[in-house]
Image (tube, rainbow, N blue to C red):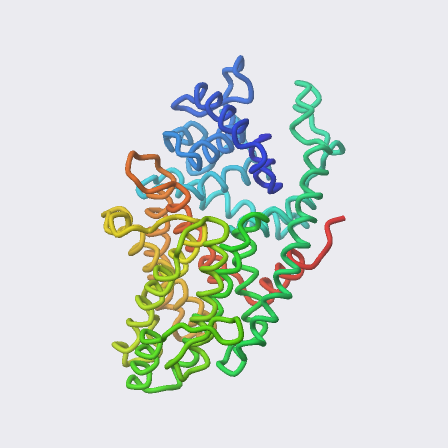
Length: 458
């Protein structure tokens, strides 16, 4: 439970070695029927089994989903064998465990349906906000969990009876508040820089609103919130904003004009004007905005990681741009948008995306899977307010859920290939950001932005 709290409070990065040791220990006591709250206790429970299952699976350990059959009877799930009722805490743990299901794990699909129904009904009867923590953005989850974390004041029988005083304590809470406050101040300064960048390149003239810019930064910040990952965070936000600007621009011009834009982008020649990098032959403000931004990002990566990524970043943009002219229907969702984001983030993290790496079957599979998921989720978002298309939306949603399960399995399973875990994780992170947008209405997103980015932690 301590590992889960450290992760939910947003401070697990300070305890990586301790968490790894703890999970090795827990895995040693895992049984085919789950796990108990103590190594000396043979009575298994669904709460500890769910927490252990989720943590172990997310860290690449082999754990079987059939353990949950031990707690199921006639379509219902219980904390202990023979129990006839359920509690919010264990059902929330069960729901979160079911979120990391692999394809074909029917017992976890049943668990998800049962737990989500129970939690929705509980929330409708009470002021319970537990379901708020299920949207998938780390920074957003952390902000709400800090408010709900009881610290020393959180009293429950097990904590007192077994003297587990570290389970919920003020040391964790104080650390989380200090860390969140530090990160939030940095994020607010970065947002000011984003606004300055937006105005400098007149992106409003290309259809990009400040609200869209803020949402782009929020998505990046909520997934990559650590202070030492500012390059990745800002590159993600700026790339998302520029993608939207190009999308608006391309919808307003002909295919011939699109080809001219791409040719100008490809044929740009870098030069220095008054000490700043500029470009000849673009003849387009938007193309120059992209090229200048890529150059600025590359300079930061070179300074921090001593790696030259400008050519790779430009190649990633070319891959995305070249898909546009072949699409005569402007309403079609362009492929490679997610791929562009993933490659940009990984390059800005100092990873080398060599030809050997990106040609690996698993890397290509991750790329195709993520593109398919994000393209469908984006289309679902665009059509969500059109009632006539609701019947069409439901079927793709089912296939997206299956593909998300496959993506989770490929990302978190340990293997012996040459793809670093951090690189694989980026695919899932980007997909989850699209999933968040597809399942949250604009009003809810605005509330999250206000609370996470601007509201002070008390």
